[in-house]
Amino acid sequence: MKLVYFASVREAIGLSSEDRDIPCEARTVGDFVIWLRGQSQEHAVALDDLSRLRFALDQNMVTADALLGDGEELAIFPPVTGG
Image (cartoon, rainbow, N blue to C red; front, side):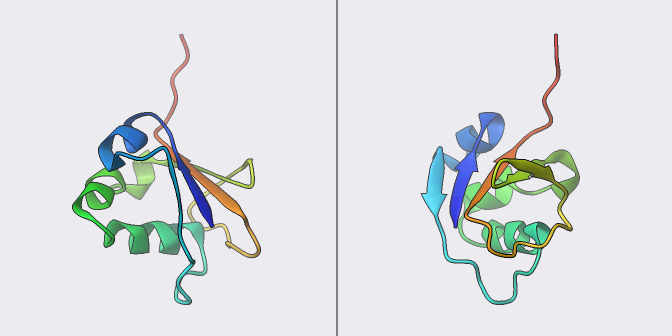
């Protein structure tokens, strides 16, 4: 799956995107993000609090409990404020 990172998540991980295979135990977006935390210290810091992250699966906004299914791209970003 292609992972795309935005704003502070991108800065903390040090990548704008990467490709990762989905582990068999990851059925939801949240499962996958929790698994990603274990991939590096940078991932652990950037993805520490699921409640403070937003997700888009194939460019559709989803919550952490959304099923991954056949998704091809997961975007992860912090909450956005307007102004």
